[in-house]
Image (cartoon, rainbow, N blue to C red):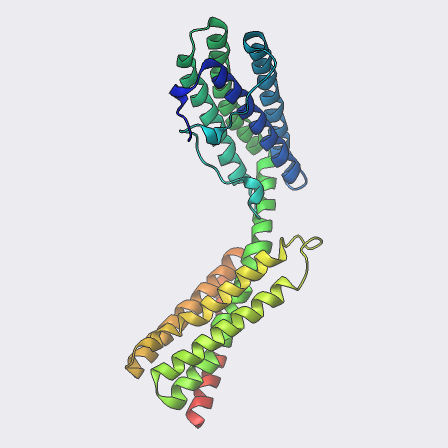
Length: 320
């Protein structure tokens, strides 16, 4: 069972501090290595933080050796109650600079609070002095992270990284999501409304819409995932793109399919048409917001395309 900080001896507190500093240093080094190519300024800041943590670890080990000898028991954060449980960032497919900055601030604040609380666990003057010094230095680290962020903003490095981050977000999330939303919203219009006008039965239209939406989602998802591996294009992990594209395709089709759960045909039809208008407006806005397409031009292109497919569906359905 996990212990509380108050249950630890001075020896255990030092062992935990050594392990924590080593872990934080490795995290900073790993993050710097991972983002160095795309965000060099932030990577340089992370390497500086790593060097600081490594210095703390050496000071803690020297004091531990003087007080308790050579053997350091393995005590980790998860063995002690009160530490923040964090998802490892290396598991995150799309790691952004803002996510890293937030994580650094959390880590430094937690380290400062740990050292401040640990001082009460020992009466040894040398241990208390070192813990107090480290608490003060962790506070300086928090301020250092903010200063680095400000320096990057003033020098223009922050703006360059933000542009790079936006580009990666557009390539890896927005583009496949938009392609899926457009395909799901537009390509399913014809079969859904053809079935609706052919049968005048809401349930039949609903079944056709669900089949078309799920089929299109699976098809588009695999097509996107198999299109390229993302290494040269910078579009990220193929299966992430495929998942985003497939889900958005399905969502785009299901949106105007769900109203046909209403048994009253004309009421269901009216709601479905209204939802189609909303879907087309959302697509036009996303193209304007992220693809730098003029809003009127985006709206015209999307609405014209959607209306043509919609009319085709109605004509085919009414022909029966």
